[in-house]
Length: 143
Image (cartoon, rainbow, N blue to C red; front, side, top):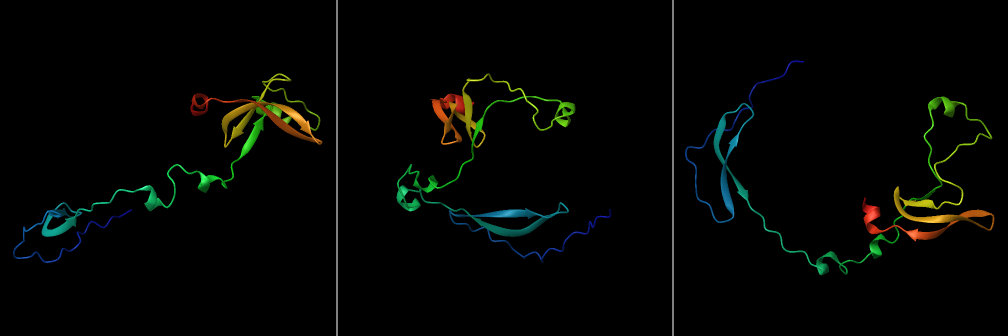
């Protein structure tokens, strides 16, 4: 693949450069693609931003009201198993997959894939549910 290495034309250089600057302006020297330096000075102005306050954000600091309607994925994990592909290909209706948890052992409750609690499986009006028995500590959630 051929690459165009022709240098871009620079504007004519001024006869003299001013070096006057105030406390907010600096003069800089620009370098073009081919490595030659231009003597044309450009101005760079520094910007100062004011401090943000809770009034400028429009609400109380630490308020969670904006987050209350965000949907999170909640899942309950009965257990896991590692199965070779040859066994997966043999699965049929009625196949039993052995999991790494015993019957009656607490199930994991995950929010967006993170463990937040453990509980026991219950039946509520012909539907499965989970009764929370333990909330995972903050240090466990962050690990």
